[in-house]
Image (cartoon, rainbow, N blue to C red):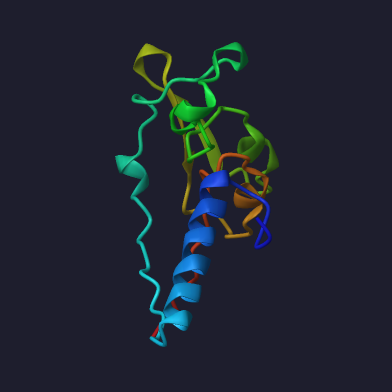
Length: 131
């Protein structure tokens, strides 16, 4: 991806937008990208995803079964260790599950967590001006 280093899923999405823009231009119509809203963090779960060990990669014609870093946390703790304000904590849940939580009262919006996360879990949103 030439836009920014990151997730394969982001690169695929950017490629689709580029192809749609070229198609619209060739057909002489205005390109209007469809903006997607982020999925609320409370609706994300790793319960349906399993890790694929290196020796069990699918055959090339089944590559769609392989993980492409679609936002599933790998518990690397980089966000936890890099947050300068200590706003991120790791909570252990029942059954050995876990989740990372950001304390909005401590977060200063520096974006370090988003920058160091190899899985794309943390994202930054523009501040809304106060009226």
